[in-house]
Image (cartoon, rainbow, N blue to C red; front, side, top):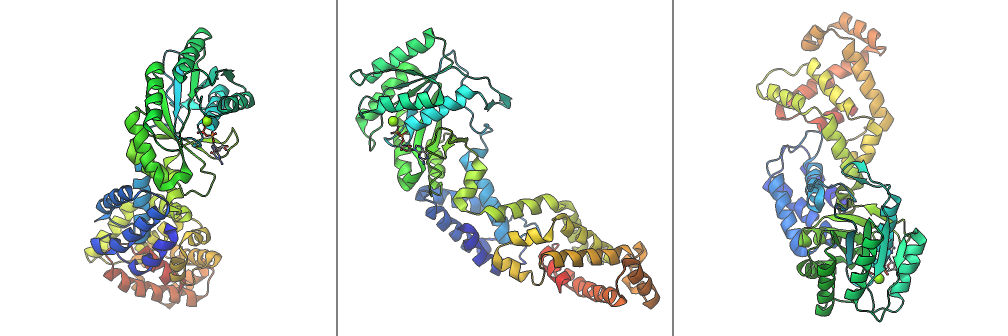
Length: 455
Ligand code: GDP
Ligand code: MG
């Protein structure tokens, strides 16, 4: 997955403060491969990678992140946006703001999961436990009907499903025309004051003109407020062509991606979103009728890239590091001002804000954690606390002018911090080394400092 792929190249990029044409090239190649492996269609991958590259170039890298981690952050953000994160829609939102009955038309290939999803949506709506624009909606009175007159037992299947979720099922007959079934169902739903009518339809094994004509005719008759394209996540690359055909034939309003409980990486979600331009609204995660979830762009992005933990690290770092403080320090260093123990203490505070060091290190890719040297969990934290104790035992003047620290002052500080004098000496010599290092660095250089402290 991408985490593994990136860790390999991340190693060579430590200490670089920004993403450049050169240092992103190899990583972008890995991103490209990861997306292809996740079954995202090639043209979509190309366009996406170009977009990430544009965003990445020149981006300042927060000093505690490697450029590799920073790039993962950008990839995730862009992927989330592309998957609908920027649509401002609530996950799992359906538009039902119509003169009742609000009609939902289900479209998709045979076996995609239309009938199952019809049952799941009926359950979702009739239970009324979902939200709409941040408000809980009431229970809906739902009617389902099947216009699938081709497959033996298709109508019977919907009847069973409706029974299982406890919604009304309007019987139809395989000898009827689908249009007739639709007209009758709409009429029935109006007369009996249903809030929602869900119309299940037939699918074919492949895209064909007869099917498209039929579903278009149903659409014209029903004027649905939602026309949902149901697609099987396991379809992978093929999903693109199917999605394009349906999207050209019908004014889709949204997509439901089924069978995400399988091992599909979910790349199809990206392709389908790209091709249709329509939001993914739900995902199917089980053949059971409660296996429906609102679609979360960020979770899907994570699934596609398989980058779980590295992301929480990126987020944690972005939240904790005070970017302005880091910038101030960088400016100070550039201007040639002296880096003193007060600055050191500030930086230490920043490191501490990153939270528990042990869990932080667990989140780093293996190679990076190795590079962090002896900084192992509890040990690192203990060291950090001792260092801080020493610094806090100094007066501000002493921290500003470490050269004031002669033997007697050192003894006082050691006693105050409850450490041997040697430890104060070690801290001071480490600090001197770091001062030298700081001179060479334009930015904070958190990673290097962490290493220096462990050593
Ligand atoms: P249709 O031909 O489009 O109506 O598809 P069906 O609703 O009959 O579903 C086809 C098969 O996929 C059935 O065996 C369903 O149980 C299964 N299925 C549908 N949705 C999901 C899902 O989200 N997860 C899993 N594992 N199976 C599903
Ligand atoms: Mg069906």
